[in-house]
Image: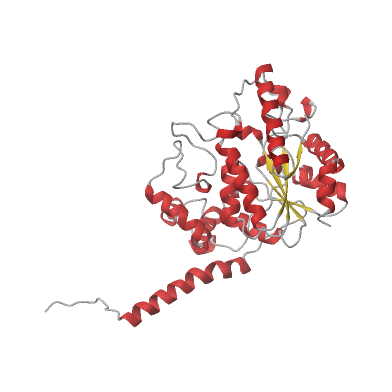
Length: 359
């Protein structure tokens, strides 16, 4: 006689299993959102190490949306790579207004294609808001930055770019990886699992984490406390003139064929479809480090961006060139630069008009 321990489920049994699984998948993110302890002081910004933890961005946008009238979205220029939390653009804008009006939703390395994906899949809480959208021309400074290179290379936030259409020649993950990314976008449970790995398990899966921590109970590592917010500069706040950076002959790309510009247009349309009022902040960019020919091409590109925004009826402001010593590198200001931008932006007629409509 052959013994068999298999359990044969009826259709009703399978239905019960599916219902139970669906309940777990749905309830876990809801419950974790309620128990996770998150300290968000004034001038809060996502911890740098969570830049690609999109669950945290979604939670932060959901928290910020009902409390701050204006959300500022952009890359590390808005996040504040070379400054403290009290030296960012949002801090100085709030100081100029005399109230907490602007929330910092900057994310390191958030090029326009990644920004489009982040807001589409993880920025759904951002609705009926004022949104300052940062456009960094650096992402259009070459075909590689524009993600139009033919050879494969590593770039920031690949999980946020299109996985199937349009296909990027420089991005070649396996079909399994692509499907996993799509699952993360559509299922909050999958996004939560990645979040837990990022916050509590050093971005390792449980098997590898256990190998590196053989005597540690994983349940003890799994706390409900988020990392402390970043308040120190991520990089040393030194002017670019003191770092020995040579002049750069950046080629720049035209807007008509630019993937990053097309992504920016999609982001604006997406935010507007969610009943947000968008104000585009173009720059800053350190033209001091460009060769004469590259600077001429950059100025033409900057003017074309402003012209197209004007034609589209999108409120905008092009950041004037800052003094050379107020830049840390190609596009990141130092504290004095952010303060100057906030003062000039606050006085700009287009911004004043746009803000008046937010009152």
